[in-house]
Amino acid sequence: MDTTATGPDLVRQLPPPLPAERIVALNQPRQDLHTTRAYEWNGWTFDVPPGVFLPGWTSRMVHERILDGRIETRGRRYGAMGAGLGVEAVAAGVRGAREIYAMDVHATSVATAARHYARLVGPRDGTAFLPAAGDLFDGVPPGTRLDVVTFNPPAVSQAVSDDPDVVRNTCVGASLLARFFAQLAERELLAPDGEVYVIASNTADLRTIVQDAQDRGFTPRVDHVRDWRDGVLTFLFAFTHGSRA
Ligand SMILES: C[S@@+](CC[C@H](N)C(=O)[O-])C[C@H]1O[C@@H](n2cnc3c(N)ncnc32)[C@H](O)[C@@H]1O
Image 1 (cartoon, rainbow, N blue to C red):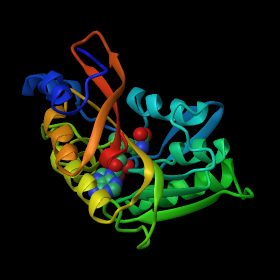
Image 2 (cartoon, rainbow, N blue to C red):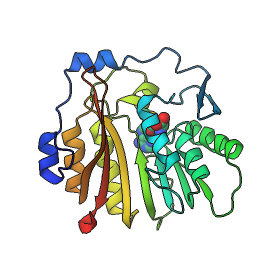
Image 3 (cartoon, rainbow, N blue to C red):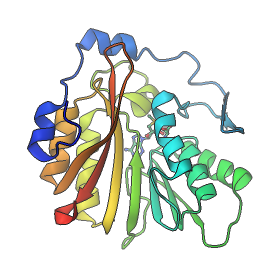
Image 4 (tube, protein in one colour):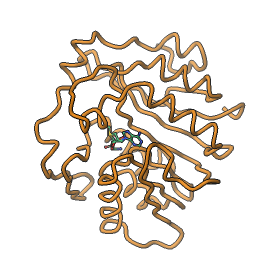
């Protein structure tokens, strides 16, 4: 595909979702979600309480970009949507973000992110850590402006489990992204030069996700594509709002 395409040309080129049975097979939930697990990355150790998402390869595509600045948070107001364990927040703290909103609908995840931030980053001049539990941006005060937002959403398009924690972490689907872009636009949460990074694969309905964002005035581009050589293609999209693309 032409990764420089944008707008309707980009939507047309995006792959449709993989067959349903393949998506379900690829996303079989691990049996240990309701246990306490451990995670290590970049020399840091994180404990993972029951119900909190254990980061995977897709998570790390975002984490490494925040840490090295390919997704730049230094000096910027950063929103980590679906903060989970808090790895994005920690990476942005080390990078020197100005404000870090750790947003998650799962209160235990926000508390876990806050704990990891306190232990691995701690107080820093010029950096504020702001926990924001709630649905999408509900925990963020009115008037908030963000320069950069990231979201590794539970975008898988097939129900892979009846367990509400698995669904919350994995397979809410494209409707969550439609609400995410609607809130960003309606509340004018994105600063004029702001960027929104969303990562999703063809286990999700990519065309609907990107079309819904466009319908809210966002301009998409493909920042990166990873081909896992098993039929799965993961897209890191960057969106700007209005005519500033
Ligand atoms: C795939 S996990 C990503 C976690 C972490 N950012 C990472 O990449 O490792 C998705 C996260 O989105 C959160 N989430 C699901 N629905 C949400 C909502 N309506 N509002 C905010 N966060 C939500 C989940 O609780 C979960 O922590």
